[in-house]
Structure formats: structure tokens, C-alpha cells
Image (cartoon, rainbow over all chains, first blue to last red):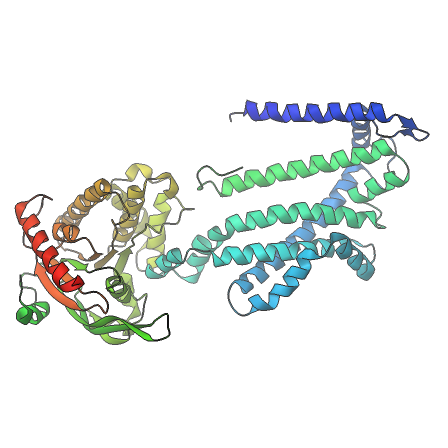
Length: 262
Length: 283
């Protein structure tokens, strides 16, 4: 594997710049009676290690516990949103349902995530199911639109080719429809994934007793600035790891596309 | 050149020297009427009858919009006809949908599965056909990729190949199912002239080579608007008028192969047909 040193250097430089600016801001803001107004990067880094090693203020469970709780809610909700969105999108791509879905999609996309989260917590209380359904509800419209447009843009010539050569439904599905939809599925997943984070952490802040959102919110009320920021850093790390995994998978699946934009 | 009067008899004539009877295509009184943009019926093909001799390289030429591609699509069962009928070996195409398995199609653009490797594109046609034994698949992929000169590119993806190479994959895909009738819809018109020239020569070579190997000649129905191309490639040339497409001339090209692009006989036929084309098809 060849490592892209240039990319690596840019990444390192941007981290360094952010840390420096952060450090300078921390020093210039000074302290209040509760400690630093903006904890320095080193303080936060130490807090991150403390959380990961189970030291310091831990409520409810270990870092792994909170992270996996959030990931499980996000995973189920996102999966549900992707499945429902794909089915709706495919149905909307042909037939009369398209018009029928126009308004629900517009409403769904313009609802603030806060409203979605509050509605589901009102209906299901601060249970896992509320977070899962809120994620699903927030992501479904975006997935639907993407898949609908993707299904509409499948190359008619290729379908004709399949028909002329006598391909049955099975072969058409696996060799033509699914591969044609792949780019749209990926872009839907990308967007839905980033939206899911926002929804799930927001939900967790409202009365949940576990999860990254809860940990951030709890430490906010406890005036543990360093721990709050440390949890946000942990959140970023998890998100970045998943994003990298997703893009590697995408590269693998889309290997046929020359010079894919990254 | 045939005159108007004996045109009909020529069109219906039985092949004098059919090598070994391959699928015979008869088009009888075929018309195709579309609904035009203004809602009025638009006649695209007007009462066309053709007896296509088996084992021949048949050219169908006409100006754009004359319905020649539509005619090909009707033979391929991709489009319906408005009246008339098409028979393959005496069987009415509409009543025997399975006849489709004996046809292969090379399109104007390659129409490949860009997400599948070159070899898997050939495999697709073999799987789709349904009549080809599984044991033969690998050997056929190999054989026909070699035939079009792409044996080293079996594991490439189509978008890594040039346009001409992609079209070769399309030709290998069509040949791999060993069709009785090969339908080609302006397959070289999107390529630059040098590439097209090479492909025309190779297509003729492959066609003759396959005959030498198997003892039978595939029927090729080749749609084009390029008269030079038709004269270089074909045994029989049918010419159609501007819409509504009607047949107005039949020409048999007897120049022996391999033909040269600058062979005086080829050039003579080309210029005769071009003159006729401008008088009758466009005039």
C-alpha cells in the first residue's frame, strides 16, 4: 500500500493549526470560578484518555458503553431509514405514488431535527425506540429522494440490452438494477449517516441515561467543560473511523469507475 | 443495378447458392406507425417486404429517420409492428418469442455493464440466453475475446478501454451466444474513421473465419447510413427512402473478399449508389 504523504502532511498541518488556535483562545479567555472558560487542548486530551481508561467522572458506564449505545441506536435507525427510503424511492420512481409522496417528502426534509426528536420522545418517552425511530424518520425523506432519482436515471439502453439477450428478472436485478443504483445508495447513506449523528445525539440529550449525547449534555450541566469537550472529541473520532470505513467500502464497490472523485 | 420492375422478383428470389441453410428472415408488408408529437399518427415504415437470404451480410441503408433502426428493433422483438409480419425460418416471430435466443444485437453505443469486468460482460449474455450449457461458458468467453483481439483485457473494466475496444467487447458479447442472426445498428458510427476501418476489416475476417471453422455462415443484418461502409461489408444492400421508409433499391455486391476501400469496383458501386441515393432517397 502506498501512503499518500502529501495528504498526510496536510492533515497533520490542519490538526496543528486547530490545536494552536484553540490553545491561544484558551489562554486569552482566562478562567472563571469554575475553571478555564475554554479548557486547553492538552487538558481535553488528558480528559479523553481518562474517559477511555475509565478514570474520572463516569456515569452509567464506561466509554465503550456510551459509544456502543449511541452506535446501536444510530445503526438501527439508519438501517430502518435506508430500507424504508429505498422501498419508497423505488416505488416512487414508477407509478402514481410519486405525486402522492411529493408533499410528505418536502415536509419531512424541512422539519427541524429538534421537532422530530421532540415528537418521538413525546410519543415513546426517552426509550431507545424513540431515538431509533427519530433517526429513521429524519433520514427516510433524503434516502427516498436519492433512490427515486437514481432509479429514474438507470440507462434505458442497458435495460434494452438485457432484454434483447433474454436476461430474466434475477439477472436484471443483480447485474443491472442494483449496480446502477449503487452510487445513489452510497450518496444517500453518506448524507443519512451524518444526519443520523445529529438526531441521535440530540435525542440522547433529552432525558436519556446513556449515549454520547447524554454524556456531553450531563457534563455541560455539571460544568465539566473539559469532559464535555473530551466527549465531543471522542464523538469525532468514532465518526471519522466510520466515515473512513464507509469510503473504503465505497471505493471497493465502485472500483470500476475510473478516477473517482474523493 | 436492378430496375424498378425486377426489383420485386429479386427481393423475393431464393438464394441461388445458400451455403447451408441458416435462419431465413422474411419481412412481409411491414408497417410501423407511431403516435407523432402532435398526436397524429406518424408512419415510419411503409409496407416493406424483404426476403433476407441466409448466411449473407445484409446492409440496410437509408437517411436518418427512415425507420431502418426501427425495422431492426422489430426483428429483435424490442418494438412491436403495426401491421405485417416477420418470419424466421417460416415461424412467425410474434408467436415464437423463443426465436429471440437465436438473435444477438450490437448497438450503436457499446451498452456494456461498466460495473462488470470485460469477461463478465460476455458471461452476462451467456447466462441471459438460457440455452447455453454452463460448461461452455468459460471456453466461449476466452474464444470470443481472443477473436476480437481482447484476450489480455478480460479482467479490465469497460471504462478502462477505448471506445473502439468497448465496441469490440460488444461484438464479442454478441458472437459468444453464437447467434444465427447478428443484428448490428450502426455499430461503427460513433468511432473515429481509423478505428471504424479496422473494425470493419476485423468484422469481415471474423465472419469468414467462423464460417471456415463451423461450416456455416451467420446472417448479419447491418444498419448504416454510410454507403461506403455498406459496399465494403455487404453482399446484399437494401436502400430505404426518407420517412415514411419505403424500399427503393436492392443491390448485390459481388466483389470478392478481402475487399479494399480503394478497389475501383468498390468505388464504382459506391458512387453509383450514392448518386441513386441522392436522387431517390433524398430528392
